[in-house]
Length: 211
Image 1 (spheres, helix red, strand yellow):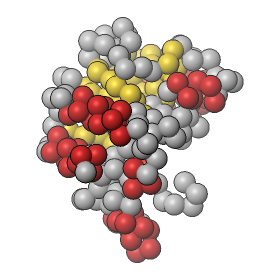
Image 2: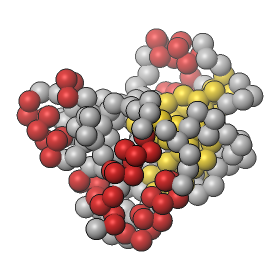
Image 3: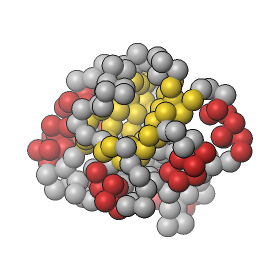
């Protein structure tokens, strides 16, 4: 992104009916397509904010039967794509029994839909929390990411995103609802994930909203 090294992750959930739910698709390769197809049938492709959309077309072309779900801003931005629906505060019927969701508001520039996979106790975020691997960056970029508050193992909410939050009350309300969820794992689109201790990690990451 703008020459900054940004590793990116796609999350795949197999719903109880066997359907696959794809979050923030990454660049496609034959190997990635094959790996996903080995898991089941893709029924839902989710774009959690208006930045993560570049690879929607090839994944949708590969899985034409899948429904595209968009952040409200993205639905306006990508009128060339046919979206089944927009993401909101409540999960659609297709996954409401297994995945919770909310709109993390407060930033007019980059709101984001956050998800909770209830059975595994896993929180799924895209850009609002990051934890970049130090070994994947040069000395210069490690310092930049450390200053931005997103270098593992002490990652968190990027400073540049914090500065876009103008409605602190909306952000706090989203934070509090998110922290009311029961999760101990954290899957991030950018950086090292957490298999345990995620609730405390996220609570610390958003403590600045109380200052």
